[in-house]
Length: 592
Image (cartoon, rainbow, N blue to C red):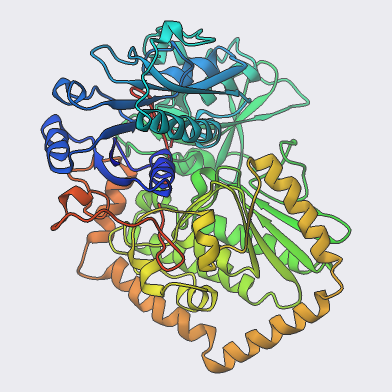
């Protein structure tokens, strides 16, 4: 069928559904929901048999849904209605939640149901639940709904759906989200922050300055403090007291005119943060333990795990330097297998655009960030005395993909989405030694195909190309369990000494053929041109991304109905590859 994917942005959920539907053999075109007239034009051009809408914040025009079946992907259980579905579920402590695929009608979220899925609602941020459970459930539900539609089935009214229990709920307001620091405990504060994560954040204040708070993490305290005080910092996070402990505030968006975009909390208040005592983070602390940081080492008898979990997968220059220092510490240990474990939502998405945007000189900070990431990648490439595994439990994009390719083996969780290209960010050339790493990795296709085709690629499609060596695990916990098993087997492999000799020999031969410094120099010449040259495309694209400027048009590589002549793209194969990012629902809040 011809299926039009109508979405506010081509985020991770939209990309997941795009990959699912193309894998089923459908011709899928994307139109960003910019204006009714544009959407009407897209439908007229593409003439879809079906419209799937995974992430909208306004209603589809009546002239469209009366003529073409429109499937809305709502992040709520059957019967749930309203624009804050997931927000309310988290705030009210629901134990089970779901995704409903329903047909667009005059009333929002009130149409007949084509498919539905449920899942256990874990204690986590809205963004994380959206990227994991909601995306997985939406993938299953949309595939089921499309197959049902193909079979000329019909939908059921929500009231007739087995187990329907949802109800209409109003949009959650900042009054509903308000934190009462004088009486709220740590868990109540965390629940408020988690329900607002990604967007819109909790409107509050730091240092008597109004701002939206994001990215909260619990911190037990041995001594009671007056609640609501900011008492310490660790990295760029600020520690604020509650009536029974404290929470780390990782990111904020100031609401006083000093840059209306999210940034690390300490960078948003540099003068005040500089006066706070530094709370040390233990590199060997257990996940979630007091003092644990975004980077930690886990040492076992035969393997070492280097965990890093950065907000939204972005890595600032400082974070790259910290991770590189931890990597060097790991490489000084005797174990011969090192596993790099990024976060459950993201492995890595490359340089930190928000930190760059906040800098006095974004060009200088861009340069600082890319050179720090190159230093980190080189450390990985030159780790010749052990086998390094990049274990991707979450999505990866741009420089994060190529940093992973510096490892000897890349293992990815099933369903992970890769975007191994830079061009969507103002035609960036890219670095991270990709001109060295990508050609030696590819088993099929061409370098130009990977770098110039600006569409998402899932782990299963990346496997035959050579970008990934193994795909397994239906969920992050299942993936981690198998990673540990495989890493232990690798450490005990009788062929490990031979593998290490072959690795050293290949690196020596590669260096003799062309030094790593030459690859880096050539890439950085192009990157310097992106950062400091006459073409402002990168700076414009970065500013639009950071400030969430709505798209003015749908890029042609997504909107095949606007290409001349229109030609539905074939699904990526071993000879054709490509990648991008997630969210969803008729009135859902953005998740990232």
